[in-house]
Image 1 (tube, rainbow, N blue to C red):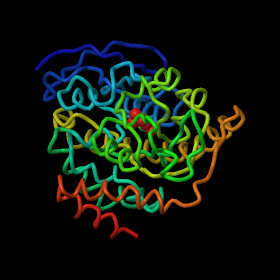
Image 2: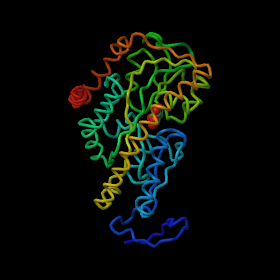
Image 3: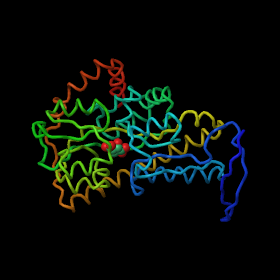
Amino acid sequence: MSIVWTRRTLGGVAVLALVGTLATGEARAEWRGWNIHVPEYSVSQGMDWFTEQLEERTDGRLTAKTFHSGVLGSQPDAIEQLRLGGIDYAVFNLGPMGPTVPATNVVSLPFVFKSIDHMHRAMDGVVGDALSEAMEEQGIVALGWYDSGARSFYNSQQPVNTPADLEGMKVRVMNNDLFVGMIEALGGNATPMAFSEVYQSLRTGVVDGAENNYPSYESTGHYEVAGYYSLSEHLIIPECFCVNADLYNSLSAEDQELVRELARESAQMQRELWAESSQEARAKVEAAGVEINEVEDKTAFQEAMQPVYEQAYAQQPELEELVVLIQSVD
Ligand code: GTR
């Protein structure tokens, strides 16, 4: 048993309490959380609510601090850090989770969900359960599913209406070969790159475009340097509130339940904020002069991206069953 000092507030007065970490052994006094987004982002707000509640509901026995804006490193690195215990909890997009937990690749297949609501129903049910199990085998406990809307293409050159408009274009993708295949299937050149590097790369022409949802397009300032946003909505990828498995398993059954409940509630709250913030972000980029276009014929993109499924099934046959599982959800 190790002894640690934690601070807690009683009736507004800060007091120091001496507590033993008991079964938690080496666990940090204050959990350390990774987040890629700026503090105003819906994901950040959900995580902040979680940390406040955790401290309040345990009278300061459990405390956590979230480091926003990616200051603890890139997402692929943070996923590894979370498995090793250098980071205790995080909200990750499942896109870059694929190299670590291959089953999660299923949600990175283009047009795999019918809608954002369909994604929520699937993740809150059988699909979420199957992916949680696969993640747990890699030391990651998924406690709740956050929203990340739908991702669309944007670039500095021209509106994208058909796959041919992406031909020869240099497009930044998240770190996962699946997305490289996706851009290649459309005739573009894919560049996997950390989120934090995209702004400069767009500005200097290292890449011509990227793809993301409205809130990320807006909060990163990408709209300032890539003014064409085309509503292809080709990817709907959920995000997970994840905790390091050793830490989670070291908690009492009651604390596990509390942490799970708070993560779920924070996800619920974030989903509501998401819907609002997407509209706000759209209004903001439009007001700044971004040209937004609907993509009339999404089937053309769906058909052009079909090879992504074939390649993925060839490499990971179990994905086919997971796709069927998604399709079994109404
Ligand atoms: C955002 C997502 C981030 C990150 C980013 C990216 O939509 O919330 O976690 O994955 O996209 O494109 O790297």
